[in-house]
Length: 391
Image 1 (tube, rainbow, N blue to C red):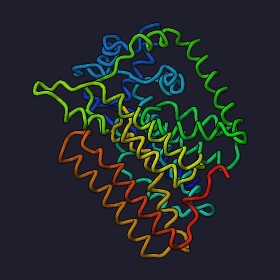
Image 2: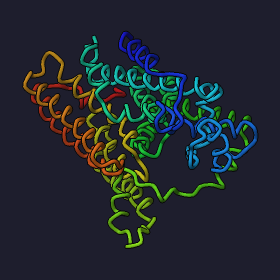
Image 3: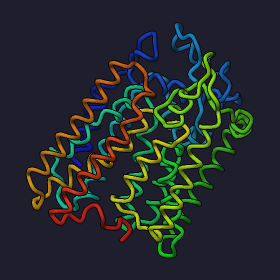
């Protein structure tokens, strides 16, 4: 609890109701302006997916803006964020920065309790959380990735604590941005179809039905606009294998084929199903979740560095397990060094490249560190990784 309070206080300290002339130079504004403008357009009967309508709202806040910040998320995301989006922009942005800090710190605490039940080492938990670079990328531009990550972490914790209603609600939060984590969500869905856990699936379905009903009741035009604007943003260069493959296949005039954007997720689903069948329906555990999450981020149609915030689960779990009394000091030091080098490498490459699609190596590097950590800690009889979360 103290860690969450400290994180919230830090967020409130850095969040400010003042803004510069450029959303890219304003803390928490660059992407948040798209959510806020979409909500304003939708609640007065407009099309939240129309670049023209969004631009009219956004330019009123940032006169120097050259093009609209487009809204791409499902319409029910606006309903989930509506308590914040209903505020005036400057205060809404500040509150969202504060909430993102809360989502970050709370996710760290929840993962620590999964990996190392008992008393939390606040210093190590706080350090492992705040040095995770992708999370601060999400905070700085006002992304909702940390909200989805909080939903994932909260779901896993509630599942472990046998709180089915709460687990169902947290799973709905994770659906605010499902595409980067599509394989993990598929894994969770298959696990929830098992008889002992169907109550959680039922609760999640009820919450989803309520959410969709509220959206259709208060923002009905957003559903129709969403269906009519289902065009893939093929101009994006994101940190996924699909983007790297499209760059390799691009013609001399820069045109790239669209099919990898759908082919890689489809291949990911096929490979995941083969693994799931070969492992004979494995349980949800940290040992199975992290590889699936890394593979999901790599093969997703779109995923940015801030979506890598989900890999906070791996970093905090490694630090939590290695800080246990039975873990060897040498193993703990080695893992800490690898994780610090990983964060430093991401910062350095982001600074040198100036482009966010080159960081596709990050999930692979995290997976390698995770496998190394699991190997080291297994020698010390650490059961944190293999224990079923829903046991």
